[in-house]
Image 1 (cartoon, helix red, strand yellow):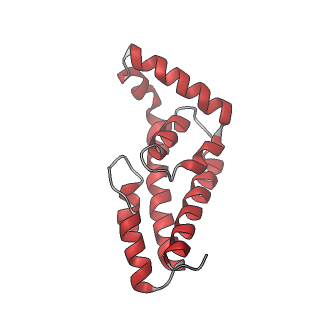
Image 2: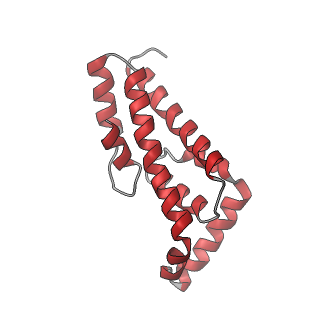
Length: 135
């Protein structure tokens, strides 16, 4: 579960939800699978955050001029809404891009970890409870 959740939080096109739901149903326990999946998924996003913070100069050099305008617009959007956008890092397809865009603004790491962890843990807990029909 940890490995699968980690990989799904990187740029690989994987989803951790089916395996997570299977694990919750098999164990009839929501807490341990939620904790393991949250840890893996959070560390995967922190990998993207780290790569963006330390590689932003390289990323900017590789972007074409037409893509540069898009990046400028995206960065102004990130600056407008700030780090709370990281609460949405759990979202399929756009979550990884949100983390990468926020990382290009060189955010404080501690608060980034808190936002990423909060969003991902809420997602897994709600998914687990929904799966077990506890809600």
